[in-house]
Image (cartoon, rainbow, N blue to C red; front, side, top):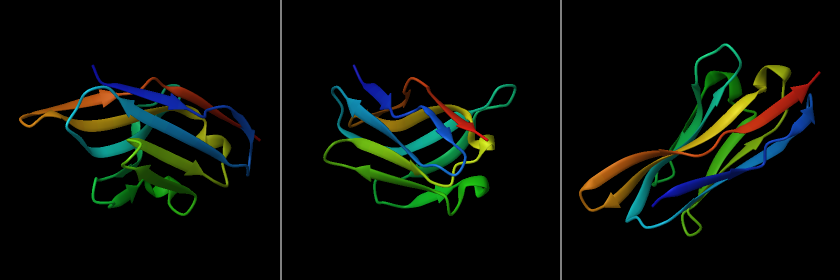
Length: 120
């Protein structure tokens, strides 16, 4: 059973920083893409940032230059460093990972959401 455990969400003031973590645990062969999504009230879930196993990254335009995604392949953990936070970054943040569970089976997993609230 694969699990993604998320931590780090909280209330922060505008301009502040926060780091989210997402650790994968369980039995699997390897992890491919890992990423972060967010969903604000009344809006659809959107991609924030993702990174491949090779280290390539891409970001939503709205967070470029402010957020940094990174991963520790030994710890099977992905991080999202969020700087210069804005009230519009307020959302529930979700971790996502595409995992090679066996040599022939890919599965997509979601972690539990974590609330990030940025006060103005």
